[in-house]
Length: 184
Image (cartoon, rainbow, N blue to C red; front, side, top):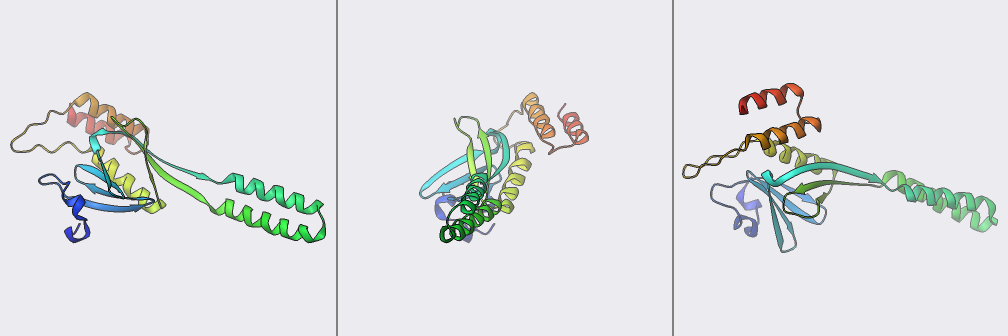
């Protein structure tokens, strides 16, 4: 990602050799995905979430069924009231039914180690799918070993994470077995 497109407050937070790979414009925040972590900005607040600390992530959505129900109730009431109010109630009921059928809230919730409540990212389906893909890819990548430091990979924990990805349908059984063999 071009450095000109990244705000200075994000650039100042990056560690040596860390690069921003992608940015997401979500509801109420911006998220920058680096090769090591997610940086979430809300106003002046910046929170970071290391990929290794994301224990689970899931996509969710909900429809506004209560709008449909209220619309149906108004239409039924409109059938039994006087002629002037009838048309208004039926039209309002129809508008609520259509709004309830169209309106949909979508979000991704990530459980992060050390954070008491799930972290919620709201936005368009396309942005959320892209964010999910980045997180899922980074969660299964082995940590980068620096020249001056050595990181010990906890094989059992990695296998548990791979099994979780297999159970979520992200990895096939064959992919799981191949990665497990490489680790062992």
